[in-house]
Length: 212
Ligand SMILES: Cc1cc2nc3c(=O)[nH]c(=O)nc-3n(C[C@H](O)[C@H](O)[C@H](O)COP(=O)(O)O)c2cc1C
Image (tube, rainbow, N blue to C red; front, side, top):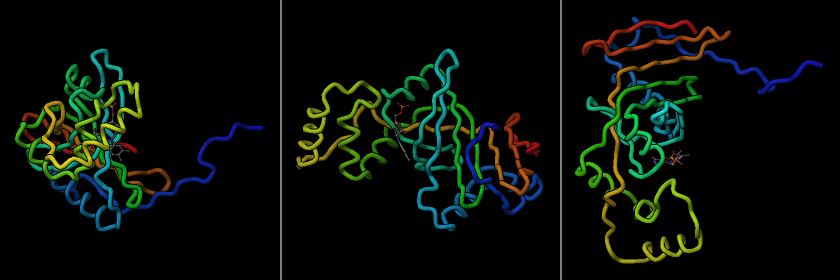
């Protein structure tokens, strides 16, 4: 008997068509357009994205984070500056982002160098977070080994119940990815998907289409 492969049912795609002439010449505007369409489709968490980094030896790692802002300065996310991703970004300040929006059968890849945002931006965003998220950021040394779960939870509870404002920890803040590449992928029937690539070439975005 032949081996079987997942999934058991075939995935069928059939989205609106895109090509290099139908998209916005500015990839950020195209991204905004798709991001808004995703929100209108009823998806509340369209800002979830996979963030891929690599260490000094080029070994990759990937995890989900939340996009918190995007504009002409880049795409912002926030995290612990001592976490594994942060250590990798220190060694190799380049990253790749991936959004998957299955309702509209779309994915968007974005790649480029990454830099820390200003302390002012980190503090501003931190001050808007709910208290329990602030506590999590203040107590957790993200990605370090947890030796005492109970002690950790006691510390969280104590801070949560406290009255004092929680300052943005020095070891916590934002990163900005400065895009140099975007790929917009639209699923189509028979796996003949649409792929439009933008590459930043001497300050100008160049568009092309890729084979599916
Ligand atoms: C949907 C989702 C959103 C997440 N958003 C963030 C985020 O914005 N920042 C963050 O540091 N971790 C976030 N996490 C947790 C990360 O996936 C990851 O576990 C954590 O950042 C540690 O990763 P690292 O050890 O590679 O640094 C999120 C997880 C999920 C599933």
